[in-house]
Length: 217
Image 1 (cartoon, rainbow, N blue to C red):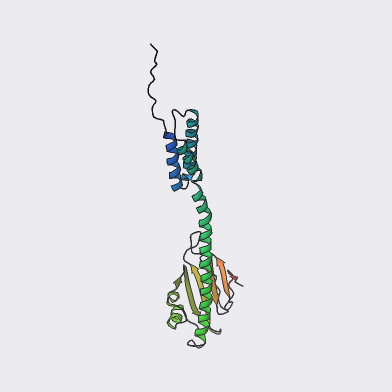
Image 2 (cartoon, one colour):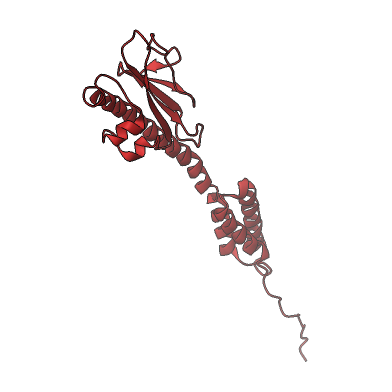
C-alpha cells in the first residue's frame, strides 16, 4: 500500500501590496503626487510587491498591478510640475497684455483730449465723463474702470499757464495674481510715463515731467 502524504490546499495568492501601490498611484495623479509623499509611498509599495512576486510566486501575485502602481506613482508629480511652470508664465503673459492695453487707453485718452480741446472745449480740456458724453471715448472707459485699471483724466487750470490735463491709469490689484505691475501717467505733452506699483507717476505745474516715472519711448 503506497504511502500518501496529504498537503493542505494552497491559499489564495496575496496582492494587497500591489493593489495598494496602484491605488496610491492613481490617487497621487489626482493630487499631483500628493506633495511627493504619495508618489514615494506608491513606488516603494510597488517595488516591494514586485520583489515578493518574484521570490515567492506561490504566495504573492499581482506583478502587473505592482508595475502599474510604480509607473503611475512615478509620473504622478508631472502634472504639478507642468502647472508650476506654465501657470506663472500664463499669468505674466496676461499681465503684460493688460499693461499694454492700459497704455493704449492712456494714449487714446490723450488724443480725445486734444480733439475735444480743438472743438467743443475751445482750447480747454475735460474729464472722462465729458469726453464720453461727446462720443470721444467709449462709455465703459468714461466710467473710469476698464481691463483691471482705474483711469482718470482731469483738466488742470493754473492762472498764467496754458490749459493742462492729467491722465492716470492705476492698477486695481498688483502682485503675482494682480492685473499687472505697471501704472501710467500722461498729460498735454502726450508723453506717457510708467512706474512699478499701484500708484501712477504724478507731475505738478509748471513742471510737467514726473519725478517718479520713466518716459515710454
